[in-house]
Image (cartoon, rainbow, N blue to C red; front, side):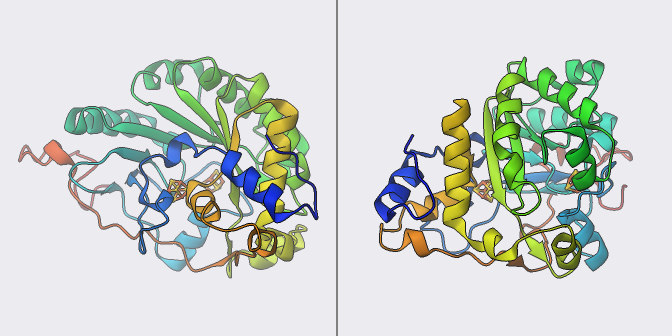
Length: 310
Ligand code: SF4
Ligand code: SF4
């Protein structure tokens, strides 16, 4: 891994973006194809907008306030390569429905890759025993490496449960990804310790996201210390992730859609790259659809894929 410091050359930055891997979760996503002019995220199954946390950066809350929270259901094509469960809310709030839709997706799509995205804090050993055989990849959101910072960002006193979840996933056959929203001024300095926590618990990879700032949560984030200029400075994010990977020996990277675009840029451009972090109201670009073979006409009244079911 190339060591880069603030002010290093574009050549060093270019070497760093070539060295960062494409996150396992991003493999097969249209977003990771820089030639696609209008990519959509992987297919997803949405279960609920509810969550036991109240993260200061949460886009589900922004979507809920704006009325763009997706209804429960399947959002994807008839032959998905990967399905994320879920992009909004916390799927472990609905454990029985989660288990049911994972089984249904497996039955409908066979070898599809099933990616669980969770804050992990509701994951018990008993629940993981039931989930482990149903998912291929598990992303656990981590915003801090100690209980105090975790509570400040997530609004919940759940750090011990989070560490337990990392250990459960980290010891299993499932590919475990620690997913970090990078917030300069709030948690960027925690990145090496978060990456070390990922290594210690046996997780396989760390994926760091640029923080998306929405009009609805901007003031709250700035009040908490967010440095908006630093959020927009993509070379800074690349440097932080490359350093954390180098210091800990962990596989660490940034979003595949950002990384694949950076890889197309030359050494003269990269050091000056600024990516606007102010985002529109989040909404799914995909339409709700019936899931594969589950739309077989059985028409079970309790089917979570039926329109109108909670
Ligand atoms: S981070 Fe980007 S490339 Fe990765 S899954 Fe999400 S949209 Fe796709
Ligand atoms: S864990 Fe995820 S869904 Fe829950 S509040 Fe945090 S960002 Fe939002």
